Image (cartoon, rainbow, N blue to C red):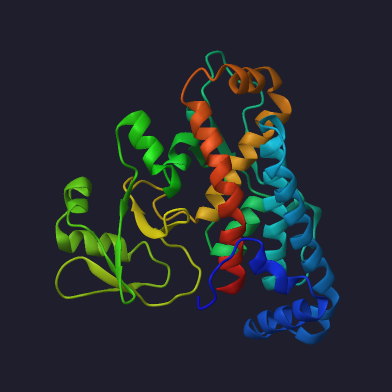
Length: 312
């Protein structure tokens, strides 16, 4: 992207109904959606208000106490996501089925509960499967479960915290040189792969494909568009990285990771009052630093990921 991201200042252009209509019309024309002029006119204010409401939630979260911060951030992200949906589905929401969260969590937490080991389960209907399919072309995930530790390991800004508290790295930093990404050779030992096997593995994880150089592990992207990809951008330190956990969620879109973590934390903040209050006051284990650090990260990263999607 030619225009550098500057936090909420980058959203200034969207607080004009005239610009939003033009923006949506271009989105609909690219997708060959019928009557782009009329549909962009009908949706421009809904699109603008989703972004405005999302911004207000994030601004309120910044000054909110920790015990309600996850709720503010979750609903802020949801509003921004709905704006993204309107760029590709002018009829959203067509049914009430797409308005549910689309994921569920265990309502009563067990004794000796640890957030790290908690899990969320993907549902058939609701916002999560809807955006998985519409925004990222992902097949039905119904019934799958994912634990919080695995999701936290996929946030590059938490890599240092994992190293300090658990003595392990969760990401490997990539060097960039004229649109080339240079992967350190040490990743081969970590993944127990030969150079050729690693190239095959990595290429299969990019929705748009990659081109490797003939020698070494440097590659270029075939497309700059926003798609499924294991590449993660470390927003605080300004570099790209690859996850070191090559499991099922290696190339899971980061926007969905933030959605799942914020969903669970917002449910805990609302319904697990005793556990949540004890965690925030007593700070008994590593759940507390990871949750606080993630909330700090997502405060900045959520709007960044949405902006990348809109401008991609």
